[in-house]
Length: 411
Image 1 (cartoon, helix red, strand yellow):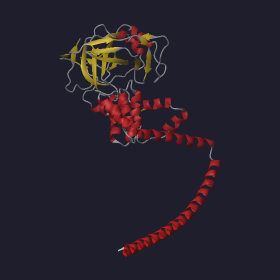
Image 2 (image 1 turned 90 degrees about the vertical axis):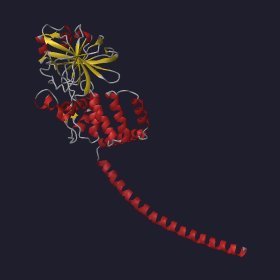
Image 3 (image 1 turned 30 degrees about the vertical axis):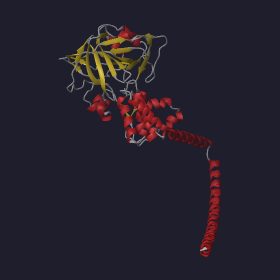
Image 4 (image 1 turned 120 degrees about the vertical axis):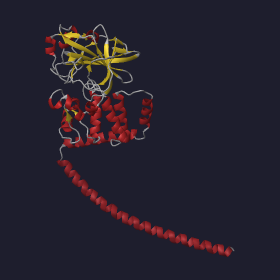
C-alpha cells in the first residue's frame, strides 16, 4: 500500500513540475511581448509629446486659460453629480415634501433640479418636474423660476419655448464674454417667445406656446354677470406701509411689496406679493370695462393664489396713483426704489370690501389655473390725466368663457 501511495505522490509531483515550467515559459513570453508593446507605445508617446509641445508653442495663452477653466468646471460638475448619484438627498427631500399639501413653484423647481443631478436630464420624472414648475410659476413675480425651468428643459434637449425675458435676464447677469458665447448661437430646440396684447403676439395666439392659455377651462378674466350665488368667504385686509418698489416688467407697472401685508379669507392667510395694473380693466361688469384695474396678488404658505381686483373708473385724481406715477421706473426689468418714498397698498382699496368671486387663472402666460379672484364691487377713481401717464395703452386680456363656472357674491 505504501508503495502505491509513493508512486501516486511522485506522479503528482511530476505534473506540478511540468505545470510550473509551462507557466514560467508563458509568463516569460508574455513579458517579452508586453515589453515590446510598451517600447512601441513609449515611442508613440514621445512623438505625440513633441507634437503637443509644438502646438503648445503656437497656441495663444488665452486658450490655455480657457482649457484649464473648462477642465476645472467639468471636474466641479462631475463632483457635484457624484455627490447626488446615490439618491439619498433626493429621497429625503421627496419624503419631506410629501408631508406638505402643496409645493411652491420655487420648491418645485428645486426638486426638479435635484432630480436632474440625481437621475440625469433624460429621466422622465426630471422632465415632468420642470414642466410642473412652469405650470405653477406665476409670470409677473416669478420670472426667475420660469427661466430656471425653461432653461433646464432646453438644456435637456426638450423642445421648449424660452421667453425672451429669460434671455434678457441671463444676459444681464452673465459676464460679457459668457453672454456672447451662450447667446450668440442659434439653438434649434429652443426659441424666443414674445407675447403681448396685439397682432401676432396677442392673446389669441398665446395658446400656440402656452397650452393652458388656449385649452384651459377656468381662464380669467370673466364678464361678471348674474345670477350670483352667495359666497361664504369673508375678506380681512391687513396691509402695511413699506418702501416703494416699482418694476416695469415690459407688460405692466408692478409694485413689489415688503413681507408683512396679508389678506385673510375665512381662516386662511395669504401674503401680499405685489400689485399691478391693466388698461382697460380685464374684468367686465355687465359687459362693460372700467378704465383700469389693479390686481393685488396674494399667496398662501401652501402655494395657493388669491387676487383682489380693484376697478378704476375715470373721474377724479387718485392720490395713491399720483405717488406711484411720480416714481415710475426709468428702465424696464430693473426694480426701482425711489429714495425715502413709503407706500401703503391699503390706500388703493375702497372702504367696503364687497366682492364678486370666481375660480380662474393668471391673466398672462402661462395662464396657470386654480387662482381665486375677488373683484371688489366698489370702484375707485383715476383721472384722465393719470390714465394718460400709464406707459401701456393696452395690456388687458379679453374676457374668457365661463364654461359652467358659478360667480359668487359676498361681503
